[in-house]
Amino acid sequence: MLVIRNLRTGYGNLEAVRGVTLHVEAGEVVALLGANGAGKSSLMKAIVGLLPPWGGEVRLSGRAITGEAPWHMISHGVVLVPEGRHILGDMSVAENLLVGGYHNPDRQLAIGEVFERFPILKSRARQPAGTLSGGEQQMLAIGRALAARPKLLLLDEPLLGLAPLIVRDVLRVVRDLRDHGVTVFMVEQNAMATLGVADRAYVLETGEIILEGRSEDLVRNPEVRRAYLGKGYKEVWE
Image (tube, rainbow, N blue to C red; front, side, top):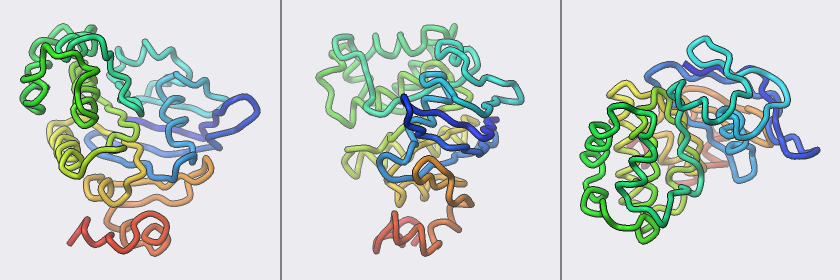
């Protein structure tokens, strides 16, 4: 579904993404792991046109979308849940979901499905989004994206700052989306939790891919365990 070849981008004279090549097959959950500042969010922004590519290519289902405007991506079925959530705090939960589903003619049905996935949002439907807890705001950010019925869902640090129970809920939704045919590409620092749900993963370091493989192989890779998982890595699989 998604193919990236030799993608480069950055800020001013700083190259944040240095010739990244990767792919995401339809129906997969693929993770991009890396420390803070590795270039993960910059790559996400380049995919959806929020950061102009300096070189390389982005293709979606065989079609070149390199450098297209962000507002075109929704028509391609690509939706980004940005780092930091960026919900519309002065608007209600329901209004945020309506904004997310603006281009979806079946948005009311999609919003109903969001409420089924996140029942707490239904009970908060008329509440200003800015008054939600951090975990509830992350649920709303994901729900807003789902209201658009994406084919490819991009998640940028979806677990950042969440309590363990909320992390579990978010990962449950990611698994469920995959089971229902939604392709997910997620950027995360929480490698232990992410490798437990992803089919495959890439490791990004200083803007370059240094490792790739199936999750069960990476979780046993000594370099990955030492850098990202620590002593608790067995909790993912055992």
